[in-house]
Image (tube, rainbow, N blue to C red; front, top):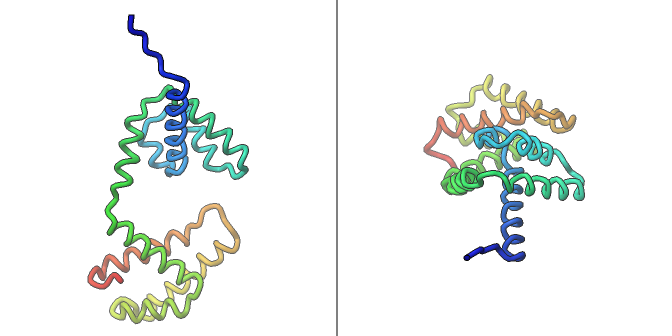
Length: 172
């Protein structure tokens, strides 16, 4: 009879591995979580953990998520996370560039908008410049009011993305 039961150390390693996978799931957006077809109870626990800010509550929630994940096939989760890690470096660099421009526009709007206008003179008419000023002002107001849905903050990023896509030659 060859009854192999994993040692206590092996079980603990596996438990920590599943809990780390749960941490990665908490970092994902709800849209990506929905693609995984997780059990409803696990999905709800992950979404709840995303809103927790207190250390001890979050730690207990992560342990709960780890316990729920023992009964879940982790291969689709690992595949999604692996695919996410293989996002090309150029794409990550582009997103970092856009995020940098958004931060510059919010911190020093006039000088940054002037820099953008200088960089892309063919795109910025006086009306376009005014529209950008308005978008920046709205995003700044959202940031000060700390609204739950930063609509204009996201729209500013989308505007930057469209701008840099239309002028793909000069993206530095």
